[in-house]
Image 1 (cartoon, protein in one colour):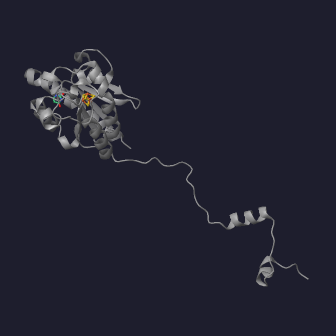
Image 2 (cartoon, protein in one colour; image 1 turned 180 degrees about the vertical axis):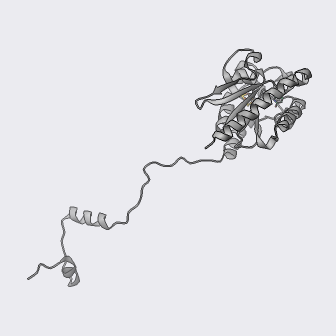
Image 3 (cartoon, helix red, strand yellow; image 1 turned 30 degrees about the vertical axis):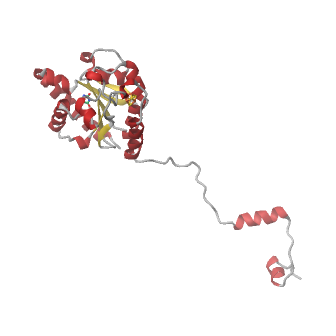
Length: 237
Ligand code: URA
Ligand code: SF4
């Protein structure tokens, strides 16, 4: 007589005892397969959302003495995923009044300089080394720059531009951790941070307001900027 199969015995109501390990193995074989990803994919938060979070922290910040006389903090403006990020020094009176960078006279000139190479404010991202206005527009002190630097670092990471433009001595020296004079830095490119992000150093637009005859240098810098941006666009994946 052929050996009864398990199905036959089940069918006629005879309980079938199976060794535990075997039962577990059978269940495992029948269980639906659940795919567990080997590595959890990084969750990407949109740049605009990250920037809003940092901006909210800056609005509440009292890490340095500059918070005392500010009307508004001045965080940044422009395209959250811009390829090109401009970094100035510190808010002036109009920026402090409005909470937006580069809206005074130097800002109007910056707009004109950008327009000369076909860029509008909305195409780039604009921020400053410190987010609160120093009294009487004095240069920010080293301890104030250091206190504020974490916000700028995170801001650069969020925007993740292909190119940083340091406008003026304070921005250039802070970003590049150097004390070299602007004359030795301007018009040249350097690298910033672990990602070795290219940094182009330019004169500050306020310099051209004071020395209009030097505007030719602004044009040279803009030509350099335009060519660096098109090189990076061409080599983008
Ligand atoms: N100068 C700067 O460096 N930043 C501004 O926002 C305005 C003027
Ligand atoms: Fe904070 Fe920067 Fe303003 Fe100082 S300048 S209070 S560190 S946001």
